[in-house]
Image (cartoon, rainbow, N blue to C red; front, top):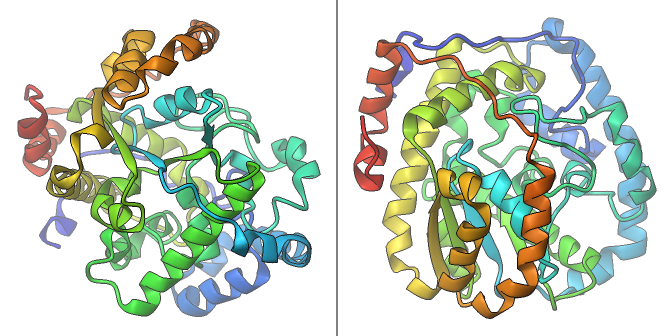
Length: 385
């Protein structure tokens, strides 16, 4: 990890330890929480984050009640639930527009997707769905990093659920333990992962998908899944779902890095269970960008043309209807777009007053680091340096 000692070229807020809102473990159960604590107890800064730990322990106790109800009422049905064998994965590095595309595609009734309440409370959401409208007590109404609307029923990343169900067998776990980030790298593509850790992730992932499929009314609807870390898993996901479709969103590396720094500054500190250094946050962003791009370019070559599509951030944001039309045509869904077009137009119109973040400009030292570390990204996608 030669780049770990690199001097910081960014400045991010390392946060307030008393905040408990928007925490990615708010839906964890006592068993899942205990497994995580047993494995990572010595890495937690207890004196700093005790309010957060107390909150999560209380939430775990409450979530366990709902999880028991889900298990009694629905577990047999969930495990028997057949999965639609043609899921659609929205891929791309964080901050490339994957959320916008995910939101757009979720308006098509052919798709089933995980919403914020379901990923936030993966063990109990079926029996506690009546609580979903009250999530504002522990969640902001807009995303901290970009002011996009955040509600209990908005589409959300399935890996948030898997991180909780697996007790941290996920690349999302560094948001809790940023100083130990390299220890979680094996969970991107699992190539260096032992069988038990892989099974922990796979079983959690598949179980959650079955639960979402069940909640959607059955296997007649295709799963629409979006977690940026899936960008490193195309080969694995094709092994699990040979008929899967992949839509990749890309954006200029400088803009992605600026946006990622803003996200770290405004949101990551709400997750920490140990005090990070700015260097750790910077390396997390840079390494993730390197890995996701490398694994995607290696693995996507084996995907049939009819099951993959690439689109830029600018295309999706500046000419949404045309971009969606091209996606549908390329993937063989073109005949259905006329029906879907008014929905896209209405949703786009609802965002006409939305203002994207204004990010801090990168200094030349930061731009040099991005050019060096994300060189392949510039070269492969034709972005100017």
